Length: 185
Ligand SMILES: N[C@@H](CCC(=O)N[C@@H](CS)C(=O)NCC(=O)O)C(=O)O
Image (cartoon, rainbow, N blue to C red; front, top):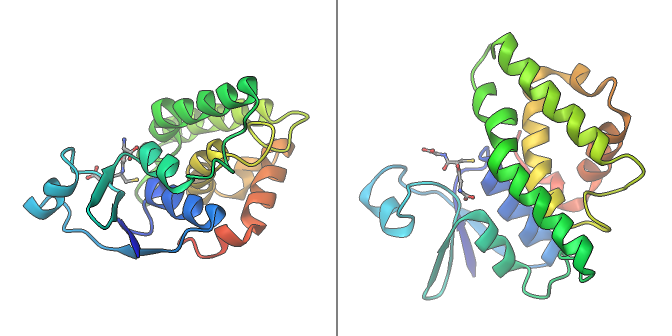
């Protein structure tokens, strides 16, 4: 059995779980001893998730996602759409997490943090104009962005999507997928 080490509220761990579910790979979620030697033995940067499969240990969510999606069902074959998928994965990792997750932890996020997150949500709404997904079909890009957007909306409140119909529709469609049902809040 393939194991994902992480904690269920972690958005990157959620991405790994979503990819496994969408790719049809059975995984079990197992905890890790955050910051302990056993954690650093699996992940030299002390983050989550970590995948273990027999002798294999993999860290970094994108590496884990591409391993789980071995059949490439979640990676468009068209070169432009494949590049577009990577563009949004990169944007999620480099800018999305920093605006939509990190600053919104805690009971009362600052108004600056909410405003910054709002700008990113607006940008994502624009990217979805006339599209169902961030690339031509459901791809790893959606599965990176969905937990981050979901986290931000939970932190800010449903009003966050009020004037963002494209993003609101995408969140609704993503939330209804079987893969999303088991995610923790
Ligand atoms: N570059 C890493 C980032 C992973 C990451 O930041 N995970 C967060 C949880 S969503 C984490 O491990 N936080 C715990 C910590 O920083 O101590 C990846 O893509 O997997």
